[in-house]
Amino acid sequence: AAKAAGKGRHHFYQTHLSDTLVLRVSKEQALRNAIERDEFVLHYQPRVDTYTGQLRSAEALVRWNHPERGLVSPGEFIEVAEHTGLIVPLGEMIIEKACKQIAEWKRRRIPVVPISVNVSALQFNKGNVRSILASCLNRYAVEPSLIGVELTESCMIKDDDTVPHELEALRKLGVKLLIDDFGTGYSSLAQLQELDVDILKIDQAFTRRICDGKEGKAFFNAIVSMADALDICIVAEGVETIEQLHLLQILSCEEVQGNLISKAVPPNEMASLMSKQYLFPQYA
Ligand code: C2E
Ligand code: MG
Ligand code: MG
Ligand code: MG
Image 1 (tube, helix red, strand yellow):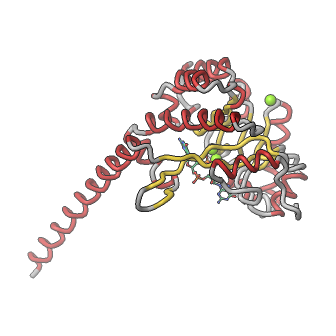
Image 2 (cartoon, helix red, strand yellow; image 1 turned 180 degrees about the vertical axis):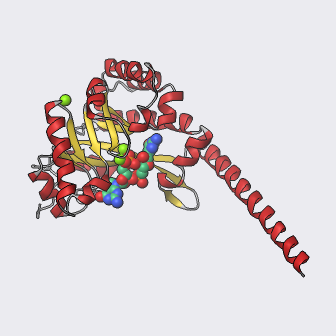
Image 3 (cartoon, protein in one colour; image 1 turned 90 degrees about the horizontal axis):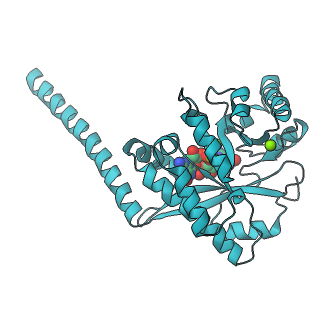
């Protein structure tokens, strides 16, 4: 009986392991097919002035428009895309889609605000982000100042000159540089100033903490006062409540983004928000 059970277990593990591999390979294949079939769309989340609610910019966030499952969020496929290197071609498509969308809005006389695009570490290091950007901006006749590039701190940790060089080249192209999810990695504000970053987006984990007590507020206070001296704009991500908004006003955080103001919306809704310009709900 023991032998049978052992055998059974062995069999179980084998199945389990190969299932995982099969799953991984099939996810990769599905993603590859989706890229070929162009099943990705961009939604846009507004970023506004903390005091007036005036629209300042919007962030392009990718969704997989899956033929059976509908809109699939990036949490379910960006990691696979990174592991398999598929983020490079996918990232190229995303940059192109954002530029194309800006051109379309402009054609319709929509008052377009700058759109920022997320670029993952692998894409930044392996992909040709700069030349893709340059060619898309040119092809769709979009001003470089209408594009921002959101990079995480994990892009900055390479210990040579390539990162500062690449950032400098992007800046020369005329696009804005943003640091995403700030506070979760290890870069210092001094480093970021040297890299001439325009905007720091504070990770939503810290936004949640500002209502918890003194420490949460102290963190924001410190960042805001240093960033102010360094002429870097601070954005709080993931603002969900009116209490958070009010505290961020008191803490002099310049801009906010989050579901309280608007979740990410499809292009047509974003066009309406751009025309509307002031986005605070009545009660703010
Ligand atoms: P992120 O760049 O930090 O984007 C912010 C995420 O927070 C978005 O999730 C957004 O929908 C969500 N969010 C915004 N406001 C709130 C809020 O008030 N509460 C909560 N709970 N969440 C909020 P999303 O769209 O699912 O994207 C998740 C992550 O996937 C992004 O984090 C980014 O790292 C990655 N991602 C999204 N689009 C792209 C892309 O085009 N390229 C790359 N490389 N990564 C992307
Ligand atoms: Mg982002
Ligand atoms: Mg973020
Ligand atoms: Mg500045």
